Length: 126
Image (tube, rainbow, N blue to C red; front, side, top):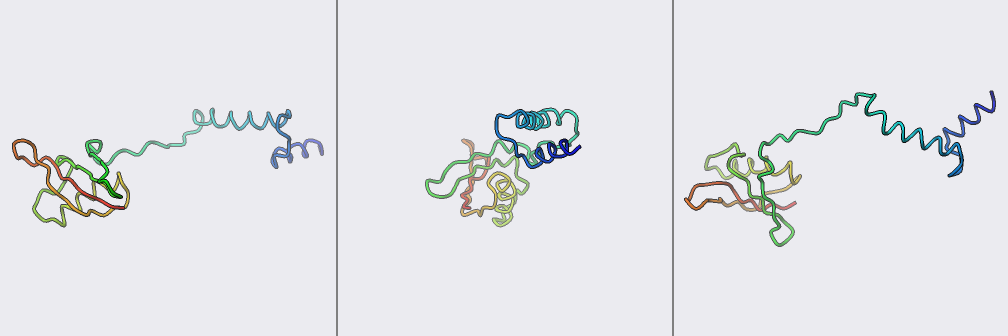
């Protein structure tokens, strides 16, 4: 009984040298757990769904300095009025899940060839 207890204690404290039989057994058990347990245990982990449809349509480019320029299509924005503060808040709602905590420095409209508003270009800094 004492020999079994000492073996289990050595497994727990990982005292066996690399390349020994018991070391290989421990590594095998760990690998079995890693590869087999997801099939046997319902971990219920799922990827986070993107809360903004069309988020991939947001273009990101460097502003040439330490900031970035985001081009956000009007189709994924909620606010369509003239208030600059509300527009900036809506732009942040779209940009922050992508960039993290940022502040909008400047905003300008993006129009197509017909003069229709298609989005906003926002300069942001971390």
